[in-house]
Image 1: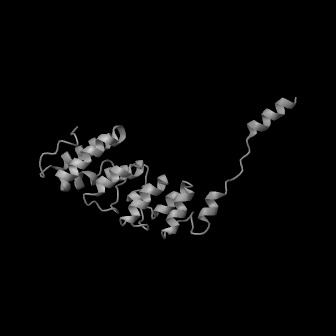
Image 2 (image 1 turned 135 degrees about the vertical axis):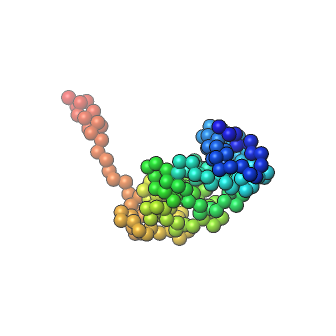
Image 3 (image 1 turned 45 degrees about the vertical axis):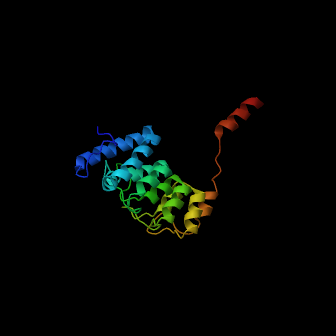
Length: 193
C-alpha cells in the first residue's frame, strides 16, 4: 500500500491517489497525529493532489467524510484548507444513505463543534442525502437534543420525512418513556418471601 507521504509529482494516477487515501484512512484509525502531520505536508506541497486524495471514493467513503464522522476537527480543518467543497457528497457506503455531506455525519454524531465549524465556513444546512434527509434528521434519529436545538437555531427544519416533522423535535427527544424493569420487581419480591 502506498504511504500518504510518498507523493512524487502532480501526475499521480487515480490508483495512486486511491492508495494514498486508503493509507490516510488507516492512519485516521490508528495514528491520527501522524495523519495530521502528513496531511499538512501534502496540502502544503501538493494542494491539487491533496484535494484528489481527500475526495476520492474508497468504498463509498472519502477521507473528509471519515474525519467528520470520527470527530477529528483539526484534521478536518487541514483537509478542507486545500479548497475541498464543504458540501461535497460522499458515495454510497454499504448500509448507509449515499450523498451525505460532512454536516450529515457531524449531526449524526451530535458534534456541535464540527457542526459549528462547517456552518461557519458555508456548509449547506439544508443539504439532502440520497433519501431526501437533511442533517437535522440524523440528529433527531439519534436523540441528539443539543444538536437538534443548535441546528434549529441555525435555521434547520425537517422536510421530506414521513416519520419526523418540524413540530416537537425537542419535546420528542427530551421526554423519555418510562421503562419497567422486571428484574427489580422480581428481586424485591424474593426478599419479602
